[in-house]
Image (tube, rainbow, N blue to C red; front, side):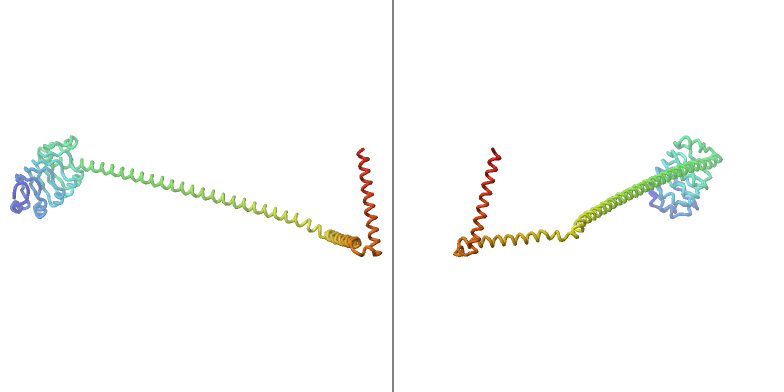
Amino acid sequence: MSRGSGKGLSLKDKLDGNELDLSLCDLNEVPVRELAALPKATILDLSCNNLISLPSDFCSLMHLVKLDLSKNRLQQLPLDFGRLVNLQHLDLLNNRLVTLPVSFAQLKNLKWLDLKDNPLDPVLAKVAGDCLDEKQCKQAAVKVLQHMKAIQSEQDRQRQRKLQAEREMEKKREAEQRAKEAQERELRKREKAEEKERRRREYDAQKAAKQEMEKKTKKETVHTRKPASSSRPSQPPRHKPSWSRSVLRVLLFVLFCILCTLAACKLTELQHQPLCISVNTLYEDVVAALQNHKMLQNMLQHNSQQ
């Protein structure tokens, strides 16, 4: 195996029974793929290397029972470190850890733990204790697990409260949305009812106007028919103008005949006939009478003026 990585020589050369010793190999990274090919190696020693972090697929080595990561430069453990559920012994002495991942609480089989010489969070350092002997290291495992379970429970409660708050907020939004939709439906319903009422009033007004027009038309028709009906009995007087026109025509005809006779008696050779003599005499008498009447009228007018 070359330094700096776990690649090179086969790891089987380092395997002794179920224990694989990779300490003091100057490793910068963990050969996870090669380790996964050795499920028999339940005890893994990676102490005294240059490891700064563990890859996320390191947590797939679920066959590990005992793990020594002491005297490296680890700053944090993978978030899903708790997947190593078969782990019973864990040595993290002399690293640069401040906190542990919450999934650490899932290491239910952990019986031994050493966290000395790490810049731990004060609360976590107090819980872990000194781990100066076997008993203290076992107590550290129990107490740290309890502490991490409490943190996990609190985070779960916080998560639940957050989810509950989000659900409540979602319910509130849904309720507000339903209220808004109901309000919009009510508004549309009211507007529709108002539109119907407006159209009904327009229809009633048009109907009333039509009825009024029909009444007015009927009244005008009745007034028009009444004179016609009243004049029906007196239809004979209505013919009077026609009779008077006939009489006038007859008189005009007679006058025309007289004028023609007078002209014939005055201008033709018939003037020496007895009939014409009588006609001429009558004409002269009438003219003289009209002249006397005119002279009398002028005299009366003159006297009235004086």
